[in-house]
Amino acid sequence: MVTHVNAETPGDERGALIAFVEAQRGGIRRSVLGLSDAQASARPSASELSLGGLVKHVAETELNWLRLAQQRPNERQRTEATWADSFRLVEGETLADVLAFWDQVAAETEAFLRAVPSLDDTFPLPDQPWFPDDGAVSMRWLMLHLIEEIGRHAGHADIIRESLDGRTAFELVAMAQGYASQS
Image (tube, rainbow, N blue to C red):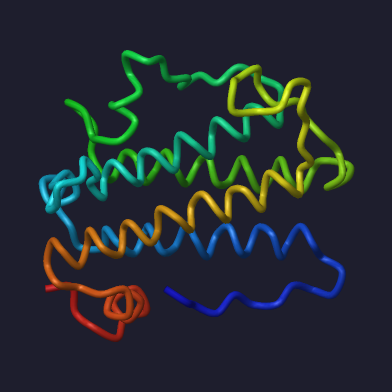
């Protein structure tokens, strides 16, 4: 859903990239407004996707890209055996937990991006068949990719939420801004 992203201070490309990533995060965060853990775990379509699972997936995906850019190990690295768990709330996890985790990741992403010397600085891509051999991408590419990745899932979240209770993205924006009730 389209929401207004405030213009950056002239020349503040980092600020603009951060603002656009945050706008996409907001779309997903709004999709879970007023939901219980059970509702956030529901899969109202033939898809395996749930809203809680999407929140968890985008948080873990952002962390993974951040760790790649920092060239540090990912403390939440998934294996083939645990991959599906990145798309659902598992025993003991709550929606509030994954939202809080994502808030931490988002704050770390912003601090890292503001601290790198240049958006042109690069980091190597992992050795995976879907990446070019000896590939590297810039910090700018990282942020543009996060906008793309999170935005794609925000669209999924809109559909899932509407399937759950009929709430549309427009209603959720109004709720988030205090113009409509959550009941």
